[in-house]
Picture 1 (spheres, rainbow, N blue to C red):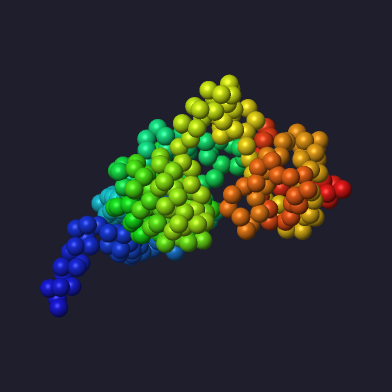
Picture 2: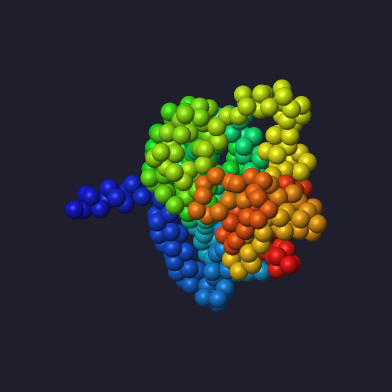
Amino acid sequence: MNNHLYRRIYRHIAEMTWGALLCIGIGHFISSWLMAIAFEPDGISAPGVFWYYYLVTATTVGYGDFVPATAYGRAVAVLWIMPGAIALFTTAIAKAAQAMAEKWRRTLRGRGDYHMLQNHIVIIGWRGERTERLIDQLTDVSSGEAPTIVLISSTVSKNPVPDVARFVRADNTSDVAAYERAGMAQANTVIVMANTDPDALAISLAAAAAAPDVRLVVYFEDERMANLLKTHCPGAETAPSLSTEILARTARDPGSAELFTMLASSSAGPTEFSMLVPAGAPSLSYSAALTSFKAKHEATLLGMRSPDTMIPLLNAPGTAIIKPGDQLYYISMARIDADAVDWDALAA
């Protein structure tokens, strides 16, 4: 029992843990105070003075407003208080700096914990420049307030974009612990950008199981993979590669490639946004909204989507009714806040 206790004490002292440092500091302070009481009974040993004198000595400030008055008091200060207090103070500073550096290194290497985040965006997968462009688009303040982004990857060892995103290192494509540390269950949106379509499918299924209520957006090269995911996760939104379709459309309709780029871009000219019709807004016809959005907000209404449908209705009939909870899609120079829209005036 004694040997075990001795080993524990020796380990704490050898590693100079915070507990050992605190105990040594208290011991040194009390012993210094007792010596001051013995040799400086009418000076720095007063309870309201000694703690101040001790800290001033430890930090090497040395104001000189309180000093030992006797030869024995000066000897105690030089041989015991000053060496011990300064050593303890510098050790505490060094340990604090080391702890901060270690925490920063852990965060950079993806071992941080962000489970307390709310309404952020989680990106799973790193595809180099393509993912970096995605993050640049998401953090572009011209499209509205930049969201908090957490990147999850098993292919990079440290955060590739530490200035704009937090990073969680995953051991594999379905690392549930990594999903929890990224706060996926409280996220607003999960974006999957894997290196291959099979990986994207596997990650999407794992993410849907870990956070079934979170909006899931997945990039696929092959539209057949997107359709396969839809059979298992009907609520998932897929973004297949449209390069072939854009080439074909541009060949027949000149300028279409630039148009698609502008609609998708967050930094080049007017672009596409969406808006959720708030609860309490009156119902109105699509034609009335189309006219009013242009007249009052210089925005062009593209389409709408009801909560019970997955595919937006573009160029909806003028008689279609827009209700609270519907999603509206429009082109504008900047995002329009739904709370800033006078819905009663639009309906009128």
